[in-house]
Image 1: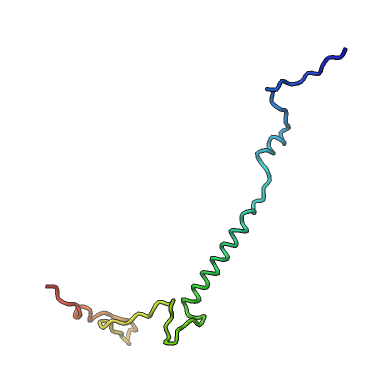
Image 2 (image 1 turned 180 degrees about the vertical axis):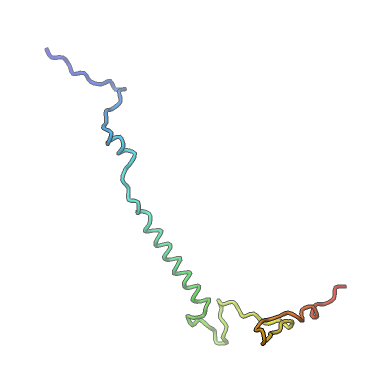
Length: 104
């Protein structure tokens, strides 16, 4: 008569090798898997930024007939109290105090 083989009870832990144990925690994944969508988004944002810069600098030829641009910031108009000194090539505001209205 043969004896039945001894089997492990159902509550006994399953024997695994060290490599199989570590494999369940360290699955190999592609580290660059999420970089393609990020690079596409960065490319689109850089193209939009370049377009805005071209429109803002008027180097793309988007200027109205009167010389103004719908995107570019208008030039600063000089105020009546500002004077330009040709000797030192600087602007000064010497007349500013004279243009102020007295406070009652």
